[in-house]
Length: 376
Image (cartoon, rainbow, N blue to C red):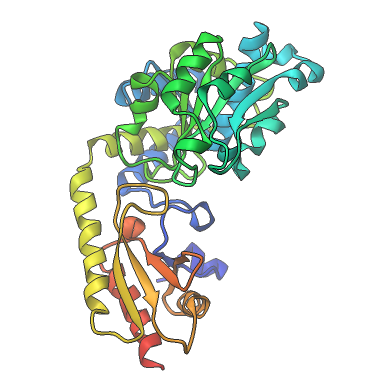
């Protein structure tokens, strides 16, 4: 029986890579999809819906406040606008471009990334601190010296690809020093779920003003959704700029379907058995390891944590033959039927990450790899 992808001639893929946006993020549950359908069937006052959902999400995530955005990067844009509004004590709607350009956001050079482009889009300037290496370790004194009268926010990235230690000051020190200067701290944790406790760790426990998460990754909400949680004082500023209010936030529309979808997915995420899910992934990794235990072409081993630093195991598969390389494997898998998408490690190896796979799909991936092996 054909579906909409078949009608369009778009090839469906087994996602053995993880919660990558280029593959669509994650899979929504039947419950989430049913709730989205219900949301679409009726009209509501959007502000009333926002207020109730945001309060419920704040309670679910043990935060003072929450706000649904249309993606984590959109949340960073809105947070930057809120920080500028707080800096001037004047509604963002009335800030001039010249006033915005004067504002600077402090960011460790080691934390720069393609997603923070949105800070500049919002009108603020980047003020980089330190170096993206360990040659000259950055200190708390370096960080404090970077503040000036135009500093409106600090952007801190919590991700596996940001170096620990010498390339940045600890988040605890960043929050303490920033608050001494009366400047809010925004933590980018877009892909840092699991563990579940990250939903409140950076904010309620450590004291950051806001933390940003993707709604379409491990939460398994709509891909076009995101979540901002944190202090009520800061979230209220962001909400005063965000959709449906006219101004900078209007273009970042979040429909009732996305709001309900994220809320539904988040409820399920908080209630799910994360230990059982991690155990299932361990079992899938073991299947891959066992399948190639006697192979002269592939060898698999357990890799932990995964590419995003999440506490989920994945299989790290090494290409042992010189008859082909990892690029051949990736292309052959992608061109196969069924099509399989895997990520490599920059060397002659690739990963099979089970976190977005259904029961039986690991066996299918193994079968496709066996075909490559047997065609030698």
